[in-house]
Length: 222
Image 1 (tube, helix red, strand yellow):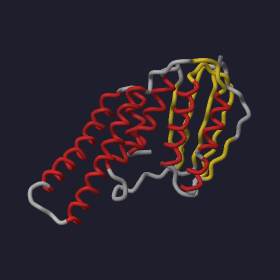
Image 2 (cartoon, one colour; image 1 turned 90 degrees about the vertical axis):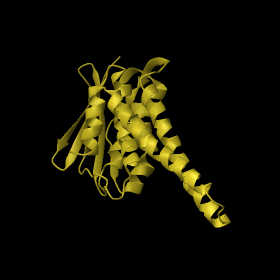
Image 3 (cartoon, one colour; image 1 turned 180 degrees about the vertical axis):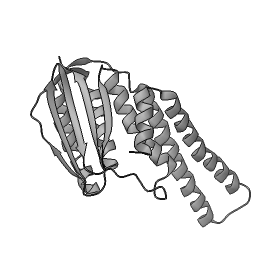
């Protein structure tokens, strides 16, 4: 398991936000530079209405990229901050997250199934738990190969709630089809999920199993 998985796993596992933030700021500088240069070129000489239209469309595209990256930076910085912790059912929130992301799985051609009836009570911020599960499952679905099978299970084991996600086939995005900024935003999901879980005493691990993978989340039971 290489590329985005190794990079996202490494940055998130070490708990080091600086490398990822540095990459985000670097990625942010690119659309800002393009936006500034594009507008400067537009003002150098009179242009036709069609040319101004094209330049404005390009500027809007770069501005939207800036907006997405600044939102990613904000989410990463605030991921470990939460209020209102109380006892919630990890099993219930996992079921809801899987249901919410079922359309994503179907769109990607991934067969996702949930095999669990365990409640798994944990001390957690409800909003943050929902957010972290969406980050984690979304990351997994976005990196699974078409026709891959993703199996999710939750159980109570020795004082811990344990969520295991097995996938049959991992797929890296094609370099010529995925921009650097998009790759970075996809990696960010794993870092955000890990940061939220670890701030509540949890542990998130990922292992390669041949062509597939296994994510394991452990949180203290209440």
